[in-house]
Length: 487
Ligand code: PHE
Image (tube, rainbow, N blue to C red; front, side, top):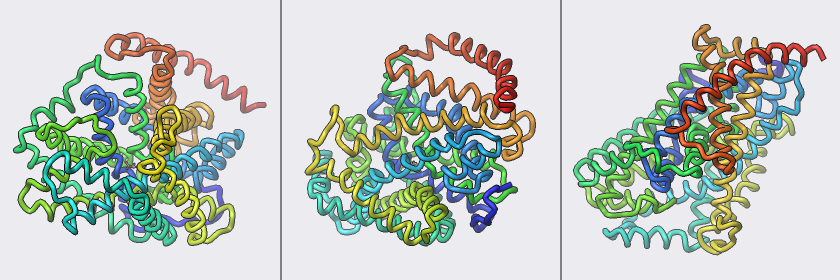
């Protein structure tokens, strides 16, 4: 029921959307970011909150975004505007789409720097540049790689160019083929690393670090990080999933697809944790090392395992590919918006976007060398991009999305579009109306210092608040909606 009137490109194969969405979701977020923030926030408790956020917030938001995309058949801005207009509501809601588009763009600006690290490590693996076997050697290699802005900038520029070339050609082409060999390959490499980890002497410690739940050990900052990461890792509130959803054919099941993508994404992240932390503990490294964590630890593992160089090459090759299938999804919203609204061809839209991207990503890249002291409140430019998007823009965008779908739109819209049986539909509605907003608000309240939440202590209260919300919401909202509709 696209109201745009014009036919829109759709995914090629039956699995097209599934592969593309998985390609978008699985990326540096799983293998680079998840382990390092888990390390920074102390392990098990962080992992548990993250898993809870995936289930209670991530999955419902993802379903909602795909439905928005398919219903509105356009970039986030256009799709949301069409869907709200269909319910007779104000186009101002498309601000959520503007924020998502900006957010995807900001993420890409620092993502290309990290993807650049991956490409440069692939190159080092190929040319023997990772020789050295101690923890200090690896830290020195990582430091040297960052110190020269021309070298680091060269790698991030390469990633930016590759991303824009692929996007210029259209993401449908090539993506399906690439993702279908790369994902299993990546999983295979992780299994290999985990097996290596089992014999490394650090495996037990890694398992207890990741999975032993110590309720007291998680800070407010950590809870917000876990929520933000649930959005980041599933590519939500950044235009990616919504725009991919706009190419989804009518018959496909949104619920089933979402669950599969979320499971694949979570499994890869947990596997990455199990692959990386044994190396960290076996070598006496600090799990809170920060963004360089995998680049300083994994080469040590490849160094020590039989045929390590070959596996190392394959690993960084697949990591770089995984990064690319994510990065192209971050600008798809912007490029499709430029094509639909400014009459640009895909190619010129990509180049125009690419130039702006290159300028901003260069500033992010400089945070590791020349601009290391250009800080504000202790954060450099790279940190700010990450912090603003993950901690604030994505959870806020997600909150807007669920409130819009749960309370503002006509209830037929999503019942139609999701095509769920009554029970799963009720479950989805309960999540978007009450559970996800409450989760997001509680974590925000905690992070802003309004109220210190401890789930272990406060769960009866939270449950009571949830029940009151349901009671009040269900009594008021049908009336509210009627009142507003008859204005
Ligand atoms: N989900 C991707 C990852 O985990 C990152 C991403 C964020 C992609 C936002 C698209 C949009 O690497």
